[in-house]
Image (cartoon, rainbow, N blue to C red; front, side, top):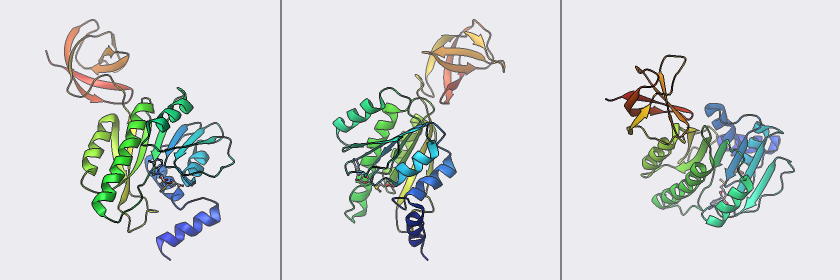
Length: 256
Ligand SMILES: C[S@@+](CC[C@H](N)C(=O)[O-])C[C@H]1O[C@@H](n2cnc3c(N)ncnc32)[C@H](O)[C@@H]1O
């Protein structure tokens, strides 16, 4: 039995709308993205296999919002809502922002895929274009700590795209789920823990140490974001260089 038949048959038996449902389960098992009560956005959600998996993963106190320009048959779930629209249109992004309405989003998913032309470079370029649309939604909507999963076809623009995702998250990993067809060039980039810090690695700035943390490092606050600096005293005025950022705190070293 081929991989395709196995997942296709399982989806039929287990009531999932697509065999792709297993890709999302496998990505979640690998990267640990969903938690109970999470709010999840799913871009390119029709016919709804990923919506089913996300709804199961977040449970009855969660929220899942799917967007697609194709109609998504009602899922008969109280926690799943859908928007019909093209994610390359600003009006669809506005409708999504309105639906989210300042609630805290935990995960942005995108399984969007272009209609295939069969010409490898064209399909790759269009896939990266869709992935970048999803990336702009993720950076716009995700607060610090949020996760992003996006499908993209392999090709020459993938490395640049991955680099751009990497600057906005603590780290990025590529996953090729077992349920992806052997013949497919698709992979999923997972951006873990969105960083919304007001500084970037390498930035130099003057600041005052406002506190000392439990490990003995000084604490500097930049627009409410905490930077830890070793080797300083409370009240010191210092010039520092930012060395590393996490979603909730960062690290810097004294340079003068
Ligand atoms: C591979 S399917 C998604 C399957 C889905 N994850 C599931 O398990 O049911 C890709 C979807 O992306 C949608 N799509 C492609 N481009 C889009 C766009 N610009 N805006 C919204 N949806 C788009 C397609 O209509 C298609 O339904």
